[in-house]
Image (cartoon, rainbow, N blue to C red; front, side):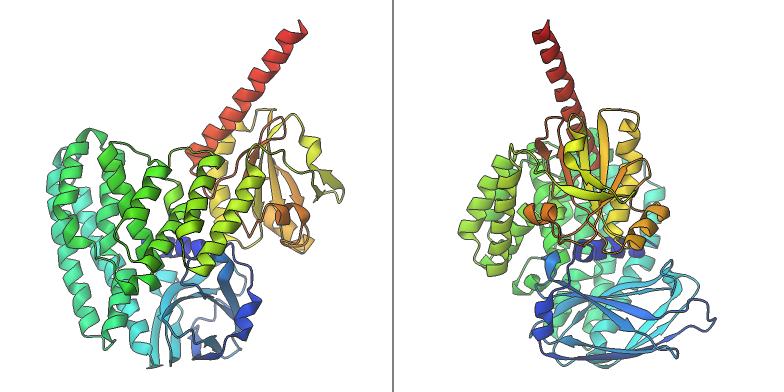
Length: 513
């Protein structure tokens, strides 16, 4: 089901770069959770739950806390969470005992006074696993379950019928049918919320974050622009004809809703593309749009930080220089008031200044043979550094796409090298990750830091997790270090570096003659 794919990307967005935050231990833990996992067929041998939460409303990956909750031999478990005096997202993830099969990957809102009992009945597939909640605060958890089930099962079943009957000459008809379908399911979602027993504030938050019909209209329009460029005028007209019906206006409660904030950014990006008749957005124009929009200060702070630091926007931008990014970061630092967001902008600016037109610092890693590996040994090669660790969802997703869409184009080019840097603490985890072929390839140069992020190279470049990339040209200059990147952009950057190498070699040859 698509819900499972999307949820894994959501978990990736908040969790794969996370470093355990010791400050969380000082938070008073008043929220109580207990429950039971029922495995009737005794086939999964479950032994622990993963509980993730973020003390800063889901924005900053470095603030993600990962709890490993033991499950006893009878299926019982319990854990406590802090009372942050505000609603905040929590993620419940369950794997089989051998860690090969994911059984649950769900998110909810925790809030003050929660004392919740979680009932999990496992089935053969993740989609058929049943989860229910009882106790104080349980109604909002059950509401999320109902809304998500309705969205991914019922809505998408009907949407598929419409899409299967669509061709490129019926864009207007499809827009009309989609509009009717979204209206129908927004009414259904409102009914679930109104009859759930949750208070109005929590109902509003859940409405913005789950069953995201507000994002569907933006997503469908963007997809149509991509696949039907000859119908651009028609698509744009239909988008604006119906958009007011579906996109919920932001309010103070939007601050608790990271997915909704992403949707706002996507909406602004799409409308800039429509306005400028482009498929990519100029980062300066986008920043100006966010900065001058009529958003209240706290939300504007989050959107500015999301635009400059987040992953949602980056794939939609035209290429830009380190200098351009730093100028926007400096302006953001000046106007953003939220302390932890300002801090992140400052950290990014400092990191940018280490990249721009700089030689990569000499560093030492450890190779598979146990010998020291020096970066200087790659002099004269164009090389892409990628970091990963065993169990990292994002690393696996990156590697799968990179191997297929990028590396296949360069694997026979002797001037290009992939340097795969593992950050696991234990060698056996590194070897296990290589053997799985999920995170790296034996065709790459495989090295390790051997001590998580406590390594001079990672500290110098302020690497907070994985996957993290840096492209270095044949002269040892850092030429590309994205927050995130599409395969197309990585291909372009590698080709540019290789073209520059050939041009320099030709110039040197001519001078020699």
